[in-house]
Image 1 (cartoon, rainbow, N blue to C red):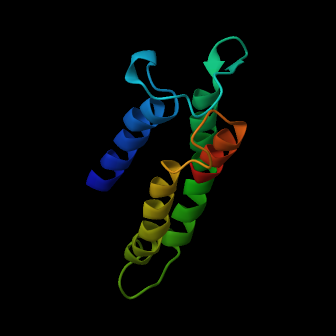
Image 2 (cartoon, one colour; image 1 turned 60 degrees about the vertical axis):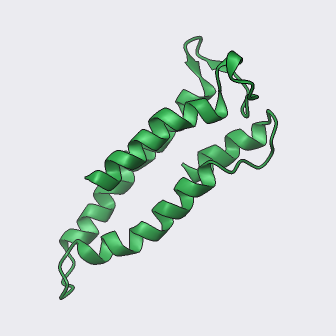
Length: 113
């Protein structure tokens, strides 16, 4: 649970500051501040889409691990294999394609999340 908590806090706290920093921070926005349906900004839509993807993908992986007959246990192999991509993509989230406001950064964020 510690790893999940750290990952969620990195995404929940650091991501908005990094991509849409406060105006007094001296940093520039890395994604456009587009409002969708009059309420949601682009960053909220991107992160929500990632959670929606997880809602379908996580049960699939859970079902695979429930069927596992690995001698090390059902969950351990999946956790070991998933650690590397989780670390890689958590790292890549904070290395946008460009250092200025660009829709390519929004697509990059969508893919890496």
